[in-house]
Length: 305
Image (cartoon, rainbow, N blue to C red; front, top):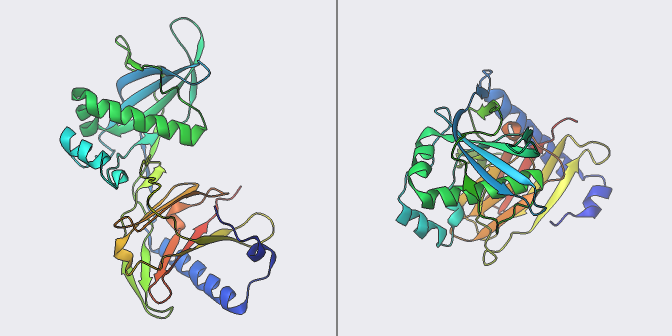
């Protein structure tokens, strides 16, 4: 990650101050345009199947794969189409919407302590992985990466995972907050004064959805990351990304996680996958792409501590 420390130590210029104020104002206006209705639904998962595996220290891990009609489904594709996507230059184009709950301690049948994780997916996709061992194996791999990224835990990939035969869950299933809406919008502009809305595909990490698209052959764009204010707990993180080979925001896909930025410029022009030093509020974040200087500016409100 490239962070320009000199920018953190120097007061902003008048032009930078003006630009920051405009960006913060636009982020506030976009937030005020949203409905005041709750942005999340509290969902009670339905049992599905329980996967048993281990971490690299030999500790048992149980993954409760559960289902709900409230979850959106991924694109309905065949096994052959999935193989083609995974072997393509952009395997991350296939995303599985899922909700990964917090870890909870449980007791296994031997009376020993273990850790369980609940993963919520749509009923339609659950039916698909129930019928197809190929999709099931693919999804377990995706869940592994989600657990490793969120909990900084290394799953033993060499240990053969199994599906429990006589129980569908390890421990009670926790409720999940499922987001109703996703953002951000990218505003494409020729200048500061003239803007046009461009809707860009965005899914939450995230989850967090897990992404496997990082390919070394795709260059990472240059960027700088700044905090506002400079001292103390920041209210915003501002990221400026240089995209000299991008002509329009329509070629950009931006995903924001709670502490992660995933930016792709199609086709295989740029790939930026970085973690942030603070958790952000995705629904209040803003993005602008200036076609004159080919710079994408992200304005990311920081979650209060």
